[in-house]
Image 1 (cartoon, rainbow, N blue to C red):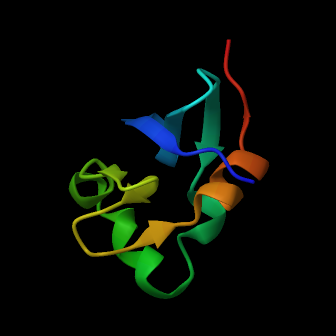
Image 2 (cartoon, rainbow, N blue to C red):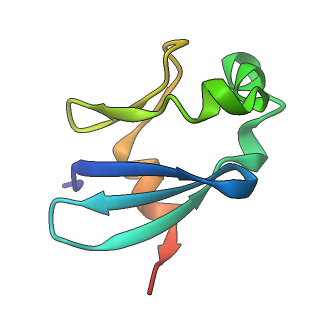
Length: 79
């Protein structure tokens, strides 16, 4: 079972502050993905900041998205 993303905020240095349905807040670093496929477009900071919640995960205006399981497993706790 995975947890849905209920809120996302773009931060500096290509990081995302994610809030999951259980109330956990976690930081996800997008930098490792910026040299792959459609994610290359996210180097444009304006496009990167267009991130939003879509269904149970996140997506950007260019249709790039990341699976909520990946977001949860690859992110770190945020204090």
